Length: 372
Length: 199
Image (cartoon, rainbow over all chains, first blue to last red):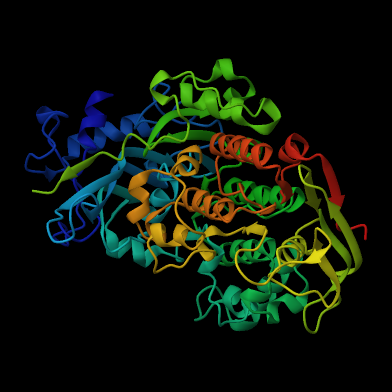
């Protein structure tokens, strides 16, 4: 177990700054252990590959009785097809280069503000992983990192494997919309000058002829209760919920392997939100994977296989959906605090964690340190 | 008292969303507007806050039309905070639109001092929404219209923000009109539920 874990510490840099362009799977030799992440990386050996296969190959009991491997557990129906995860994010950290706001303008030094810290998540084929957590804890940044959408001042480190392939920034941009579909958080992602029907249909010959795409767009609109005339509207004419549905249709239009949905449901009434969730479930059951970033725990519990609770830029607890039936089954104080804060469970803001007295306090990971 | 009298409104080239709609909100009340997506909840919020002029009918506060100069006594917190702030202003300047910053209020809403010098794209959706709420409250409104104010927030922050806002509302005797798709939240907060659909 430890050997596998150690062998997966790759140091591929995603942002291009440190990237030498070689998309090789580089690993630190296991003997060097976890303590020396800066050691010279070497190529993964055949022996290590074999070792991974031992863990990954066995059906129904993929991890030889261990509940966790690669920092995650398994859902009943999920599997490692072709011996790998559909999406595997390891040791991801995202930081922003900023000028020190407390210093006078001309003397301000550059600092790195760390917002995601050593994060690992995996999505298997046939499963929905829901990520819930506090606002500002980096959920959207995780989704953006997987999509290869980086702010110009972001420094992203870690490794992302999609369908077994190691990815860098360029390759992530390449699979965007051609393998990984994205439901963005902001309705501002729609092109304000293009009719929404055309936006959903998309361009080019991918995914069938123009007529087929028009037909599929009409089907999707009908499914989500959007009248045919909506296709001829511009985004400013849509209500919040309608714009959300258009974004969803855009993602379902392609035939992706993985959908990354960042808050797909705010503004949708319950019926529509449930329909969207059911579509994600159907997509997963057909062999796709879904990474669902959401605040709506109730909805997530309905369809997800596993729930990862996010706080201050890292996963504090990864648990089965059933654990949310009662706060006693939840291990981390923050997960319990979330449970108690649900409007149907008391709407309280009690925090068991003394260090977390003020629920709205500044996240403690926003440690700042000077760039040398 | 905030009154909407015989409001009729429709967008150009479309059927009117409301005909002869009436709503009265007293100070201290918390009214939930409910309707499925696309039935004009946001439009009604914008009419109540004076952003849109109804085709017929009028919005009165204390018997007089909303004042068009200075800060409006009916403030709207919008559904998409990223569209409600100037992307090229630092957050300090965004707040300054409503007057001098009220540090105690910022603290109650959980706004960190360090965020004031950031640009909107450097904050998360939930963090931006807190600024929008602070900005609305700093304008010293009599009524607050909250259009899906906390759907961008996790359960924990949602509860904290609503608690902070309800305290503030009790202190200032604010009337609140809000829109939410969560039945659980609506039944927690609302003193009255108005259905737009049935009219």
